[in-house]
Image (cartoon, rainbow, N blue to C red; front, side):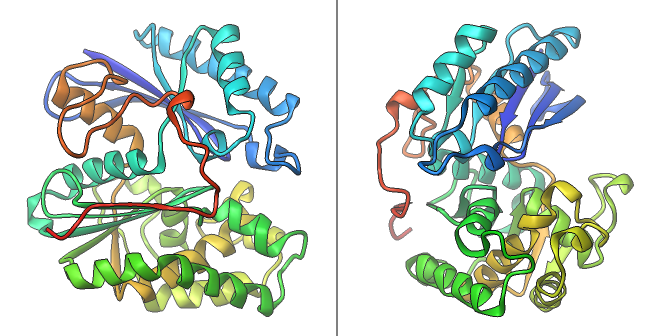
Length: 342
């Protein structure tokens, strides 16, 4: 059986095709198209007409490419950049009518659950009680669990792209005052989450996302060309030094640093500040990177349930059908926390 997922993020649309005849997805093809949707957000938060047109073209291209690899109906989903747009219903309807591909959006909670599932599968049971950090363009997910699914998930509006827009604006590099204000925001939003995670005393801390991958390379981890099985870690001390380096440079100069791509150079500082502050708040000294994240989590969930990717799964940590119409219109400042004492 072969599956394909299309992941619409703040910066890119990514296609992943995998053979799923066993217990884990085995990648056979990946592709990406850079859209930088976050740069086309209108003042009221809507995605503009050009952004929607570009998204339609990217999803259509991903569908055609998936077809060439033997998958006629890829599962497409959008993350916070779509979920938080006031005109998300229009975006989803346009994509479906123009491409024939239903574009689903998941809650941040569901993203955290599926990403944790993938990271647990990658790390194995030897990781023990595990905390997960995932920093995207629009949101940050934190999850903790002792088994396959997390006991606790929080989704916070602390994505690297969002924080860059809110705190740094056009200032390049931003003044130290803006960096301090961002740190205060992260500490405030993480206060209750940090209390819970410290109480749980996780044995292993795992990080996923392109933000952490680039920061790991900046901090001296092996480059991607050495493959996914090389262990990559980031220490809090190295990350602190990375923040200082990034804060002293304009975006154009950051792109010359190891691991920092030109497309993400502007938001790399905010991502580093969020990551370092989160590690301090949660009292995490080292994180290990998992190359498996949300896309793999979607595939693994399908394998475990043997059901369509969008079908509701049973259990207390179910993955609900994730069409935009099902999402509550909650203020962006709010965040949801799931889980009780275990």
